[in-house]
Length: 471
Image 1 (cartoon, one colour):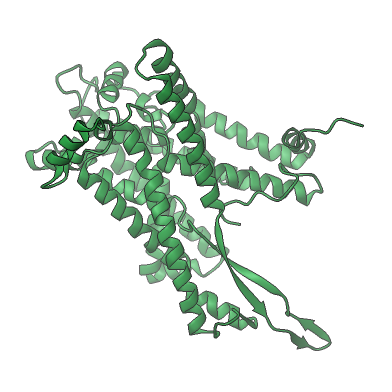
Image 2 (image 1 turned 30 degrees about the vertical axis):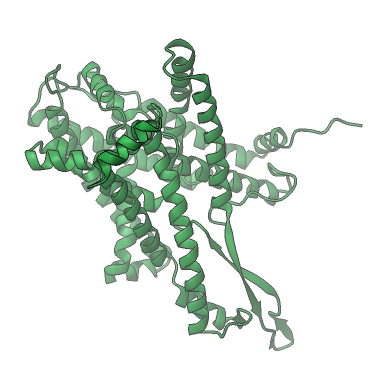
């Protein structure tokens, strides 16, 4: 009997045996390689040794969080230091603005022409945001030297304008790379760029754990094994929830048009558990990061106190983060999904949900189920996103008003003081980065598998299909 071939290796071999699919995959990998090369080209005028010392002294702060998404470009302050985040922010702002701005709402309903116009507005807004962020970054670097060596070699408006132009050009180039990958490659280009930046930091994270356990003895083997088990369980939970959906049965009545009979089949309306994806987390993280960003530019007394109160692990930081995630989950889902419009479309084509009257009652039924799913998805996002906060800094219970000091003493007395100090892990695992990595991997594999099955090749799995987040 011939030896059975490994399905994953067979699928990879099938990818490179199809000329069009091979060209798309190689094109995507080539542009991602260009992006990674640009991440190591430094911006002039910076003392990189002093900048590295700043990052080491502010480990676990918002700078480390942003550095994850730029693939280490922010730590090196390369020409891609701001990464693709300004484009994502601009896209989200334009998407939300379509609800309140009549002109944008009209464009969103004009098909391909309207979509191209909104994309053009997104590019303009990206450039404006990048110029502003570049100026704020230059101000922050000029004031972040402290008592040590200055980070900026020659501060002044010459340096500020140079940083603004360099970072804006870098972000615009990344934006172009992402659009080219989406058009001529495989998968969503913007998502793949973020994916590449996050995955690029995994080898250094693994090396940090190895050195901490076997060389520097900063972490016990038991803690490393516990961390590994936690990583596997969290990834499994993310995959399970991202693929989870509630299927509402829909029955279509038979219609006779001429001599043909249409309808009569039973189908379902899939509602995702996490319909908002990672966007609520990005928005919540951006809001929580505002005080830290302003505090680095305006180090005044009241701003310093506000920054300290909203530092990672603090009580008000966690509360604001949780409220922001829950709010944006419901807000974003209400924008992208209209139960009344879905109910009207079902009724228009002769469909109905068994046991529910068509029209308004159907919309109420869908809205009730969607609200429950959104609440479950918001709780899931909160748990996933608080995981890295706990690993890095712990939960500073002493900052809880009235009872914080007593609770801290109780935890220390029962040998649970590690809850307030964290596990000493200095790299991010979980939260937005994990959601992006798992989600993008699922979407990309699903697209490749669809291409293979369309050409009568086996996919990555012999049994079942890999469903992306949008399927």
